Image 1 (cartoon, helix red, strand yellow):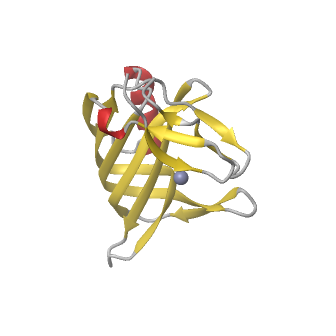
Image 2: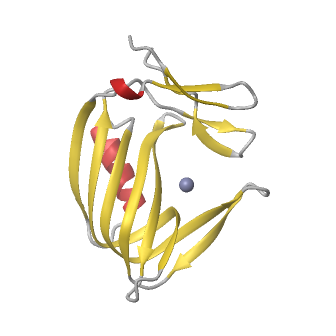
Length: 163
Ligand code: ZN
């Protein structure tokens, strides 16, 4: 058992705790993502195949096209941004947790064009030209998402408190 570190507290009084210092790395995967695959789908399938229930990941590479999103905090829906031309993945970062009992990939990306101009946001879809992703799974209890009324998003249900 580890003692939880207070992570954040909402006005609603719902406390989210994470024992930050006690997360042990369970397994790491260096993944070369298949050409023409969808990055999100590819990582989801990796998680399903390897039984990954929680992880953090980072990726770089290039996409042929992509769909990014920006969340409308008033309407509680995503505005989609279509990227129809090749872009570098200047940075992609995300996590894997469980939603409805299945691995769910949440990723954000910063994509740059041939002039270095960037577009960024929530990554819905990214058709891969080439990409290298490091997935790090931690030795922690199940990390589940649950619908959150306040934001309209599926958020981590209280985080992980080490119990
Ligand atoms: Zn997002």
